[in-house]
Image 1 (cartoon, rainbow, N blue to C red):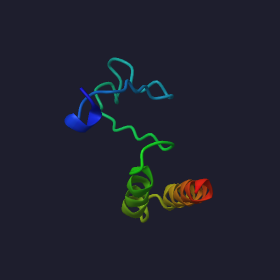
Image 2: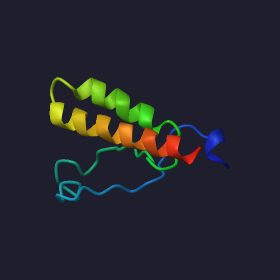
Image 3: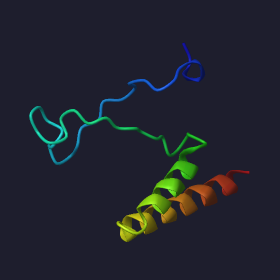
Length: 80
């Protein structure tokens, strides 16, 4: 079954680098949405929306995400 015939499903196992996703810790049962920034044609738009959403609370993260979007789009433009 291909990805186009499925909705949201568990595809990745994500562990936090700070150990807080371990059993019994704060993030043990959290769900995550993973985006392939190299191949997902919707990745840049997703990052852009997240940057806009978090701008007031996390301005440095928003700036980093916008820079990443810019880099992704430059790379894509250079392929053609």
